[in-house]
Length: 474
Image (cartoon, rainbow, N blue to C red; front, side, top):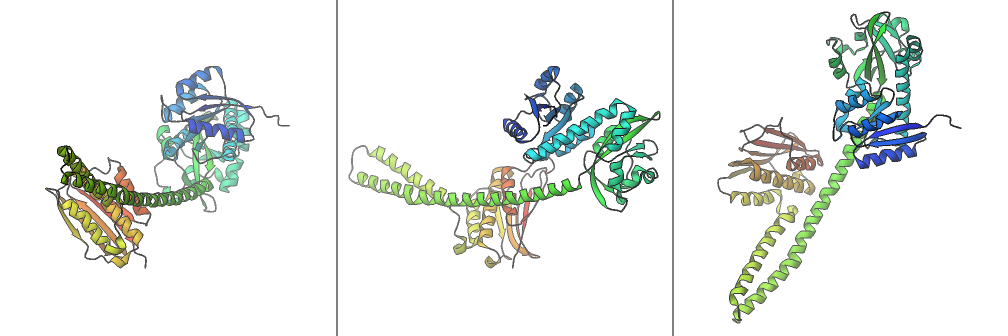
């Protein structure tokens, strides 16, 4: 029989989907769950904490009435006994790690955990919180907890940086004896290339520095990546710093593998999406051409007959004829943009020339092209279509946004790559200040499907240059 008391839990999350998933994972786990309190804002959480004392708090840092570190500090100031587990997205990892440096027990990445990871994190966080509370209780209990803590820990003199104490986990992890530890400074645990870096004494600066995993060396020279949290304590009447180490080498390796898998999965999804888009465009184009266009042509012939027989209300009939004629023109224009050119018949260059011919009609816009180094046999039909679509996208971007008077497009072979370059003399933009728009993101996604490397050069008043290098596979 499990005599472990049930856990009371407070979930501070304003996203109903993530709230639902967390609730399901808690139910799937083998944890003994007591009461589950839910709050969609810091204000609601503070009201709950006036009456309840949960054992675990799951905290989303970004809420309607608070965001970032302030969310953590507000909750942490309301309750000292609860283990706080931050739930964040991958894009928020930096600020999440800062909360760990400030005392949060652990974190979970949204969409990257299941009931097993959740349970392991909860159990670890509870134990870590228990260890923290015991350390605060008394010096005698502190010694016992310090020695038996599953995480490597050591204490060093803030002024001299000399290591004063180490626990058994530190001895096992770093492979130094306790006596050897006392002959080292914290600088000696750094990798060689970092040993000349300045030592940060300011608490806030140190917390920021330790917000990201750092490399440490073991006695045998092996490098491990560690997360470091610190506390200030009194030892023999002197203020010293206690360090707790979390070896995240394996965790980071698994995260990198997961990220690579996600990138590959996203590429597959994007490829399937683009194929579906092209198929849909072709189907829509054929539908417009084969059905609607034929109906309108028939209607036009019928109206010509009515006019020829001089039926009543000729003016109205002529007006209807003009509408139908204009509809046919618009449909032809639409089908031309939707249905991809038959590149295997006319070639990529001829297709691009068709696009450029339409642009050259515009006043005050000069278009030059250089395709001298390109050979149609260089690349596959899929890549030809991709280059055609990317060129369409960027040329449309230039016409809509750049206020350019000159466009140059070139395609040529360069050191085993096929380079596409589209440059304009428009108003440009500050790349450090602006995020790429949907058009540029679409171009980058398409290019990545063929391992294309995208480079963008631009600054205010100096135009915009897009260059993509596609590897030539022989």
